[in-house]
Length: 551
Image 1 (tube, rainbow, N blue to C red):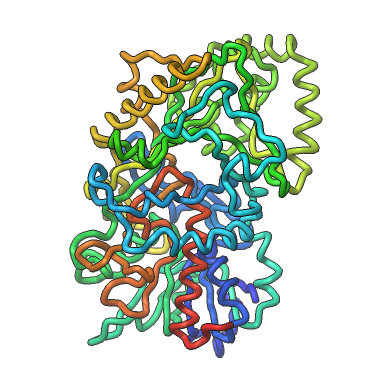
Image 2 (cartoon, rainbow, N blue to C red):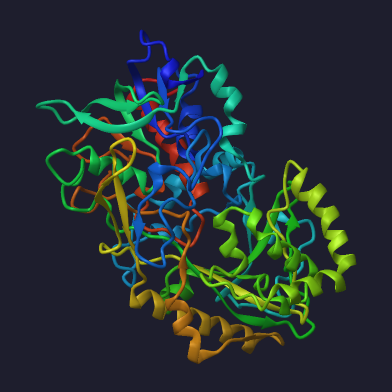
């Protein structure tokens, strides 16, 4: 059942076996996995059926530059931020779970296999096909990513990333949740506090506010926070009336905040070699793209964090790309969500346009190309169920900028804290402190140079960039604003983390977290697929905990 909280029936909505706070990818996955168990599940979602974003007062906060405003890259409503995401699905790598001497604070208390066994089902949730991430295993007749380039085991060239529809979890699973006898979703129910029982360690009740500002209470045998890497520590901190946060035994809550950092730098000059630049369809009908990644052994030898490179489109704002399609999209940028406008400028803050007149000139000189794209846009992007993820147009000169994504070293100084200011529901707002450490900058520079050495030494293609400006460019890298990771990290003990290997908050036996907040390290991969896999894993644990292992 789905109902607005202010219309709930008070006789049967005051208690539950499991209360889930948040109806995004994690919360909906968890609810669907528990559906049919016979357990009484209540999901509290602060928004309504239609997600809303940056205009939401509840998300406003402050952040140190260049981190985006905390209100960006988040949506409140059924489905959460899955109404906004681009659909990129990539699993973490085995090395992401290992303790690496050159990555401080690395290592998970669980093995890769503990999560990997849930990736196939997570891919089903995301509509992203099979658990297969090589071109050889996914494409009917794959061509080389860069013809003539063999990474010889140092650079892996046979890898792909898969794309979801992109799937809006609120739309996809709405009917199941409406029909469910076990799950009730209360909309417009903003969780404002977790209250511990007097003289006990567990959560006695969850306090929430409905759209009429009426404060209500819900008691549950188990409470799961599935509200994201910023909101999870925020609620835990706000709920502690006497300390620095529930579960914050060793001042770890809110710390180790990580975002992937990225830049677009240099260019690959193919010199006539064929490259796999555009989107391809896998044998199971999924859009995919190629990526270049160093091998685990190579990264260990050169003490590199996990990083990836992709052939990229040129800066939309610079009309020198000569593309009528890109100029048209750039001129229409005001209709795009704020989060996507910076992507057109390679995630740079300033607008690099040389003037709209040159863009208009591109429109007229490339009219046939623009007409063909318009047809593709209508049928492959606007109307198709599985949409082409985004527009890929190469530079007129045949060169390809390289997009770089990288994991960030978990640093305790990168953290989420609370300000003195409060939102409309009385919850204190967040302050996001984020920066790149020198080690990350140096490692990224080293990765660029090692990739150049490999491509230039083993193929006729050339990877070129300005060495003198590389460090400056990396140092100005933008964090991927939608990837909020590590603020309630998993550890072997409370001295190492906020949650245990089962995502239970240390010393609060009935409180769990389903979010990328629990990731000790981020890898380079977009977190959505792993968030869903971890929610499936947590559902298994909760079924056993509540005596329903086979449901």
